[in-house]
Length: 75
Image (cartoon, rainbow, N blue to C red; front, side):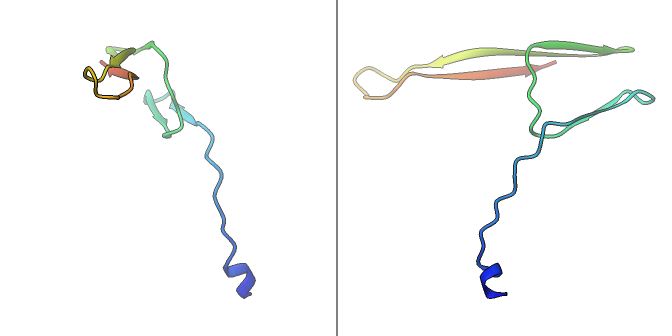
């Protein structure tokens, strides 16, 4: 029993999951879901997802590195 108690267990990552309720129009998704640029409409509700890449550059002579980051907008 003591040997079992000392075993490190790391749970596997959950799969991306999206649940749609056609009756109510509800959409539920877990944190593993990623979206590309898209537009979704249902009745008078519309959702638009846009992603742009922003570049951040360090100051001159700062020995920093240029970093690209994605910025998403949901409207």
